[in-house]
Length: 218
Ligand SMILES: O=C[C@H](O)[C@H](O)[C@H](O)COP(=O)(O)O
Image (cartoon, rainbow, N blue to C red; front, top):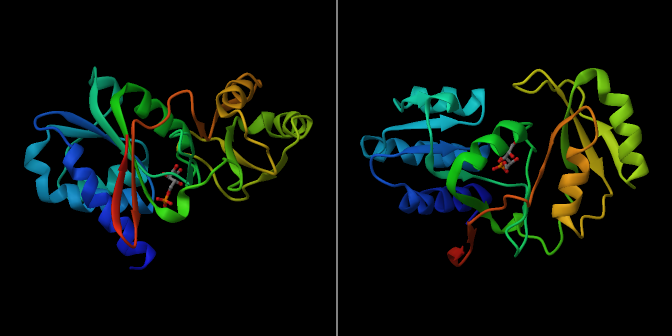
């Protein structure tokens, strides 16, 4: 099974968490793209979707799935999204596709977060994947200096502007042994819009595809 087949298998497994007649939250990325494609087969089952990026909104709409703005809904039954890294504590790094801020907001509204990954994303400790941080453009250099003080090695993601009009710093070499503390510390730096640690609100269920099938961890 190649990586795309694993992504497709785990995306299809997530359909079991889609509740009838509810609005669901949809993440961003290559794994979620397989989920959106699979969702099209059962689109009559849901009321609509709330999306975490322009890319996912476009894909959902193309497949005839209604997309609502988050301000139009009070609750989401479930949020389905991929991750760049996930631990056994269901803490994640996200934002490889620069969609972290809207992903974090949509996930916060959802009753359950279903994380869908292939086995290459499972890690014992977060941090090998450079940690994405969305930053207000005029604060970029200041935030970078603060990140160096925290022991990180920030790299400006050239040519990328987020859906919110901001920039991304990818932080290498951070020791993420206490993800909830670091998530909070990073949130407190003026100019940081959000950071890619999802630990204060981690996943509720992690579905992992490997050669032997899809494993559920909840
Ligand atoms: O900003 C992007 C998101 O956090 C993605 O969910 C994450 O990067 C995983 O993407 P993929 O499924 O393409 O590996």
